[in-house]
Image 1: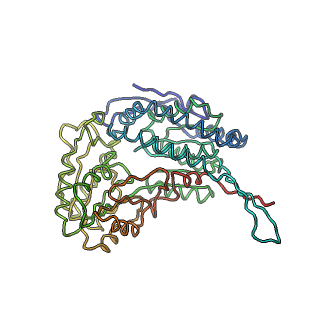
Image 2: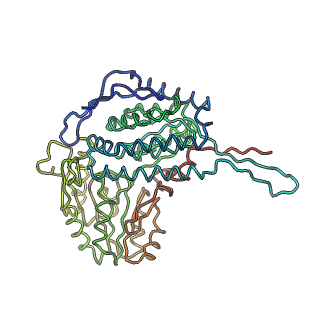
Amino acid sequence: MITYDRLYVGGSWTEPSEPALLEILSPHDRSLIGEAAQAHPADVDRAVDAAHAAFESRVWRDTPATARIAMLRLFNEFREQQADRIAERITAETGSALWFTKTVQAGLTRQANAYFAAAESFDWERTLTSPDPDTRVRSVVRREPVGVVAAVIPWNSPFSAATSKILPALLTGNPVVLKVSPENSLSMGLLAELVDRIGLPDGVISVLPAERETSEYLISHPLVDKIAFTGSTGAGRRIASIAGAQLKRVSIELGGKSAAVILPDADLTLVMRGVKSGSLRNNGESGIAHTRILAPSSRYEEVVAALAALVESLPIGDPRDPDTFIGPMVRGDQQQRVRDYIEIGIGEGARLVCGGPQLPLNLRDGFYVTPTVFADVTPTMRIAREEISGPVLVVIAYDDIDDAIRIANDSDYGLSGGVWSADEAAALAVARRIRTGTVAINGAPVGFDVPFGGFQASGIGREYGAVGLGQYTEYQTITV
């Protein structure tokens, strides 16, 4: 039983404005695993006021970049020391399988190191001389921190989402108010403990678990200068509208309905190995999951059979068990949402190859769904167009390469995707024609030193590396 009866506001553990604690239940069996204080508007006011005061005092933004990097390296060292504890806590509160949450911890080291390397070589300031010999003007071009950052993250991979925002924001000299989902109160409480150990100046960071209404209060706060958000496209549209009305800077990473294009010469053994991770990791609750499988008509049934064999072989159950591949959905409403989409697919006339809306046997106490594969899916079906956020795959047939690209691009989203082929040049040619933020050839991992983000309804702006740092700065030009 884990209890956080205080909130981490501006660098101190303080009494919440409302004392009631939220009960955190296990998605596996609905047992009580913890309690945590939740933030409300009065707590947001305290956090934002502290952040604004820190920004105006210049205590953090005037700290040399080398010192900021050193302090955040220390935070990352503390996180690495607690990696297993973090993974276990996220598994307990979200239902993400332990193999996945432990794998993410190694990825967080690479993510942090990429940000540190980018900060060490970042173009903080440079002087340009006018090419006009008559003016002899020199221009000092500087990168200034943008101001108070409201970082709002979802529940599906909390540490990754949190550090992808707080690291670049802090490295570039900004104070941050991190708003986390109530479901992540326990893991994000641990994040606050780690941040507290490195001794950031007062006001520089707050960690607030809160419901959506409090999130909107935060992003609407007049002292917030920049919004960094990861979450649903619907919420992203609302945030963008608020940011537009107030002329706040904004970067938003939203949902996806990513396509994996299997070319006719692809090795299906390798494809299935990639689909296992790229489409079904984190219980399918991932915006970058490749949930639209595009198969050539000439090999369609072969692909469908291979997918069914893969999905039916995956162990489902207690996410704390190292042998479990797929755990429960995070909440009961998310479980019902996924089951509803499976019913929608059946009603639309798609062929149910495996799975279905029925609950998995012997797992009826938790928020489980049966992993499902649909065939004979057309691009106009809702299960082919809407983000489901669960272990549901749809297989769509295509006739030729142009048809495959047309189907892949026939989406409101554009976050991720993949191409599978024995011919790398052919795969690259297809990838260059797909309108999406990242494309993996034959399952190649996406690095943390390159831009990550989405096209269309999958977001605005980019994270990671030098480009990600730039999202938290403003240009200032001084002429001499």
